[in-house]
Length: 135
Image 1 (tube, rainbow, N blue to C red):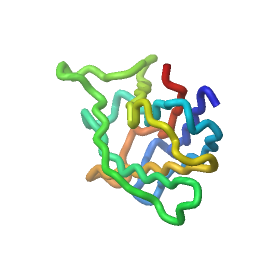
Image 2 (tube, one colour; image 1 turned 90 degrees about the vertical axis):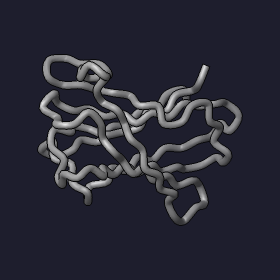
Image 3 (cartoon, rainbow, N blue to C red; image 1 turned 135 degrees about the vertical axis):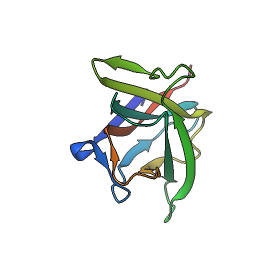
Image 4 (cartoon, rainbow, N blue to C red; image 1 turned 60 degrees about the vertical axis):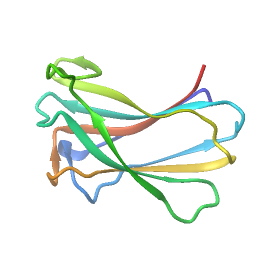
């Protein structure tokens, strides 16, 4: 695998706490380093400069997830959206892990949960994961 990306649509662009997109992927190469990104697509009507997420990961052979909280910045200091935009839709790739090596071959899972005050969180279109081999 050189590149893997999966994005999950958020119905009606309203991301509730109970909706936790889960991305599964297989790793066979435990030698090469990888970069892992969270991908997020939102409209320019999104009300905040950031988003807080719980990111839960599960490695092959594990029965439970390890959960960490991350802040993704969506606007720069000038209040401009970060990422690539077309019309009123913006997509950001946020680096989660850089140059990591997966220790085990097999099936991995990453689960994303929004932890903002709003439930549901409005104007989030997709959430996902991108994994690519590091150069």
